[in-house]
Image 1: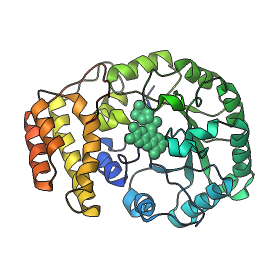
Image 2: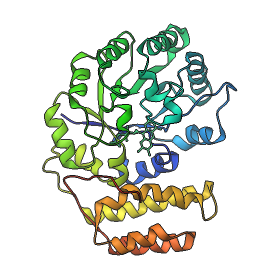
Image 3: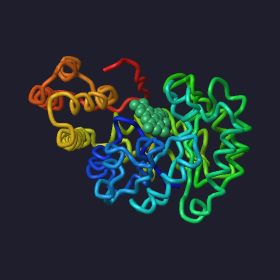
Length: 339
Ligand SMILES: Cc1cc2nc3c(=O)[nH]c(=O)nc-3n(C[C@H](O)[C@H](O)[C@H](O)COP(=O)(O)O)c2cc1C
């Protein structure tokens, strides 16, 4: 059975510059859906310039983009959906019920929506009461399994089950885990067994071994959302969508070359929208927080990238890095250190 792969929404990482470059160099039709980092509707009923740039159809040509929305106000969700449909032609929207950030959770948004299941129910009820939504918009949810404990997860699943969700993407962690700690695979298993909607797995697939382990535990899951794994090792996609991921033979030399191409496309596109020495480099360094882990023999070269402050220095440090570093396939990766 072939696996279906989605690219996770990642603020600061998977903006349109990355999505397009990824599709061109690695994706090539293999990513079924690209999720945008969340847009956050406000009372003005207008999108921010940054949000418009990211969802603009011109910037999402030839890729299947799903826009993620973060709000706990059904009215805001509905006008956003309407505008995304009418003005941008989107008919599938993902609700963020997973963001762990303190400022978000304190407003009962993101994973904070799981704090009060009754409010989540009320929100979804109002969304699906709306004729426009029911008739035009596929609504999916990306959820964690709780805030501080998973005890309410069965109740949360019961709530999701009341509505015709397009799919339920489960990142089986608590809000308090942020992006660390072991996955709660019992909770994922509960979702698989009890969700009425199709369940998509998300979390810690960074390597072929991670993928095979999860697939072995959940053979019935055929759709996987990957975030950090595709930033770190974009060529992992070829393994996962292959007929036989266990035996698929990778060309790591070519993958490294393609990573450089991907890097350069993203950097150029970011420099175009964020000229100057500061912002684009800063954003690229966020990618290096993950990419650095799949290479060997390159401590000194990584340090030079980290230290670089000017575009010219950064580019030359990156060139040297790709000449020297060796792309490797590891069984496990622990993204721990700050870049
Ligand atoms: C830097 C960063 C930004 C993220 N931004 C978002 C976001 O905008 N919306 C969202 O639903 N999840 C966001 N996530 C969570 C990822 O989509 C994903 O659920 C999480 O990283 C687990 O998947 P992974 O282990 O494959 O990376 C973010 C994660 C990170 C590390």
